[in-house]
Amino acid sequence: MEPQVLYRVCYGSSKPTAFQKSLLTVRPAILHRHCRHKVRGCDYPAIIPLPDSSVRGTYVRGLTEGDIFRLDVFEGGEYERRKVKIRVLEVEGNEDGEGNVEGEEVEVETYVWVAGEFALEAGEWDFGEFRRDKMQRWIGGREEYDDVDEAVRARGEDPTRGRGANGSITQKLNRKQEQEVMKSAV
Image (cartoon, rainbow, N blue to C red; front, side, top):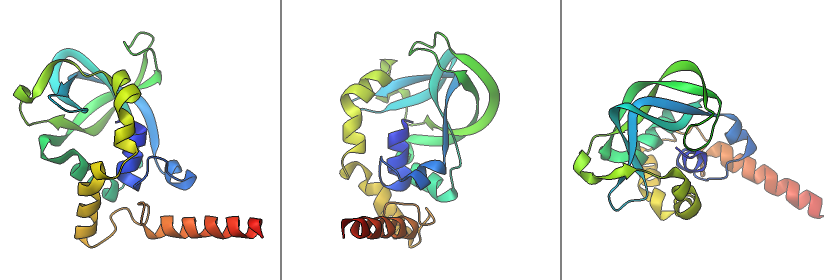
């Protein structure tokens, strides 16, 4: 997942505070024996198992139970969270994978498409095109995340433990920042 989208889902903003950003470690990784396709009529991809294929993505450490809850809501019923083994990239090559240097193997969970291959386009999903042409609508607006935000509110607790956009920690940090700005203005 693109880190800015990850931050938006977990923290309510694609531009998290330095504190929020420090809670996660995001590194490039390779998932072997899977391929990534574009979902028909959508901007986003789906990964499915396929021998002799690989998908470059991200390895994220530091996710809380609340973060995973938000990611589950975001991914929805078209995906299932499954255990897989990835290789962390020590050196990240080009978009075709040339120059990649693989490091340790790690067992992780990822979201695998379960809504049927009929809903997928035949070709590989183009991450570069997404970043260049479509990502802004995923990180800039609010409507794409209404389901996630509503599910968090309906749960009646703060599964981000205060780290979300409206969480108690974020609100305190924002108030402190506002106070400091006001002090420096006087």
